[in-house]
Length: 259
Image (cartoon, rainbow, N blue to C red; front, side, top):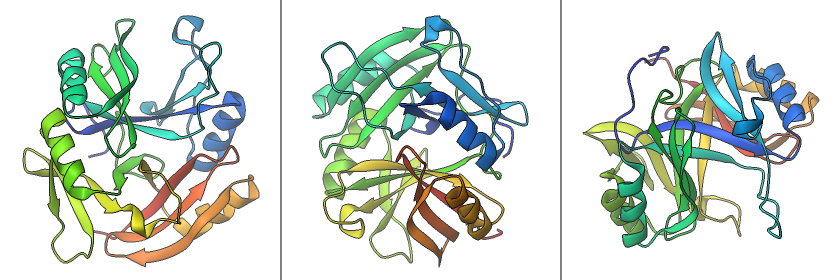
């Protein structure tokens, strides 16, 4: 499904973005790593850059900005879940025990968004499409291919994401301590326990990008100042690694097993 031409169903991860202390350095890094093309955008959108792969929107990179008197936000990849009504989803998030970080706001004619965290502290975005509905290219080298929730309490996560988005979280058959996120019966992401992460890791959403060759891409990342957090290893879905860019934003890369 290399070219996405219709809006994403509610609860489906539809976009990822990075707020970087040095936006241009991040644009250069991901251009070299994945072949993305992107330039700082108009001031009315805070300079936010929509990076494209082969002319199709792949991910966003913006400059990290903190409101006056607030600490600078961490440099992290944020996963956005689709909705048809951001305000109703915001209300559902709050009533299900989530915390608002940035309430619903309009992004010109492009859509509406908010940032929140679930009851275990994993931060995510919500996107209601207007003229822009999210990633136009997925599941091919250099593009978003998977979004994974790392949580301390799978039962609580199941209750929260079910109430807020209608997402179902079910054990993945044949896998130990791994769950699938499903929307309308279709897998849209995964979930795992924080016990598998280094001690002290907070709850989070991990972004996966597909690559042709994990090992050679890791070599390229290290040469450009990135860090390997989990060296390449083989697992049921393919060969993967967890890494961080030079500004410490963590993400995963995977060469999927051919279907």
